[in-house]
Image 1 (tube, rainbow, N blue to C red):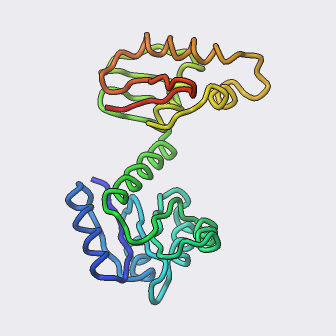
Image 2: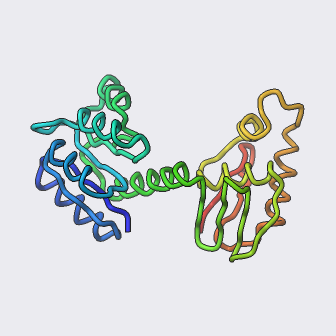
Image 3: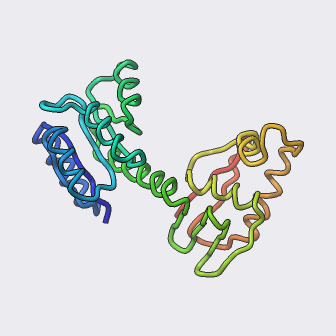
Length: 222
């Protein structure tokens, strides 16, 4: 179970987020300000931090900087009533990963939390696991239902890119630049050929590589 540190001085908002996250399967620790949150952070393992900006004792930007001095990778979601570019720029410079503007929609909050946790797990472990499928970036190994599937290095990198960012459409040019490099002599059809081979090798009902007509490709998880 993932442990979420919720830092918010408004009792109603904090309790509302806490209840929703608990009902969604998370373990939640509550803090009223940045100083209390930092104490909790130092005392126990935290998987993700959700923090307001405007708080007494220690505000959100100072809290984020302090957390980043202790852990460079933990995902941090910042809540703010301030929509100006300057305020967001200040937050990102302090080390936050994502923003939500108040009033907070709880369903949107959950989507952001899950996306950040997925990204953090992929970055920290270089491994993606979803139901019957696992991809290990260290070994370029793919397993489907416990069975090893042989992919070429380019096929693996292509699948890993799409799988790590489900439902995001990538154009052929984007995939060519990232997987084959800007200076590659390969053509757009190379991507199509590799996608075809991936589909032939990966037989699973849990994910599907979708062709988006006129745009490119995306992975849909089920």
